Image (cartoon, rainbow, N blue to C red; front, side, top):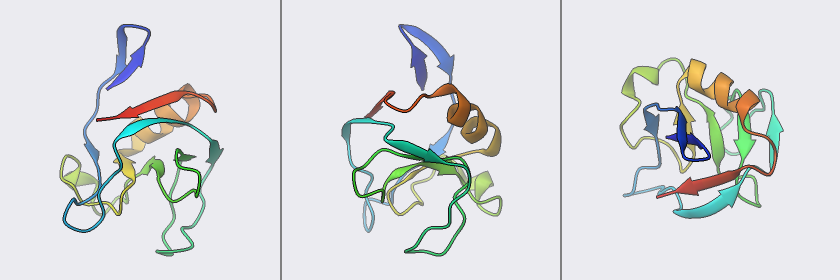
Amino acid sequence: MFLEGQREANLALVSTGNPARFSTPAGDFSVLYKRWSPVSSTYMVRMPFWQAIEESGAIGLHQASPSVEYRLGEPLSHGCIRLGYYTAKWAYYWLPVGARVIIR
């Protein structure tokens, strides 16, 4: 859920990390930087609408690959928060660098 003050700005299904292998860290974070469509140096996949929330740059919000977008809602990522195309694009422009990100 995306909030603007106390008002819901957007609501969408996401995929987080698979807790058996790559859990998504819980806690308070902030958007540290954004990249339009970088390639992961670890997994060699493109991550459109990338927004880093962890100091090492290993965890962030980004668009899910189109081939698995239908599986949003399942814990499938390597720790990132995967979003559908429209949500990822919207969030990329809506969230400023420094915006608070809370993962529960």
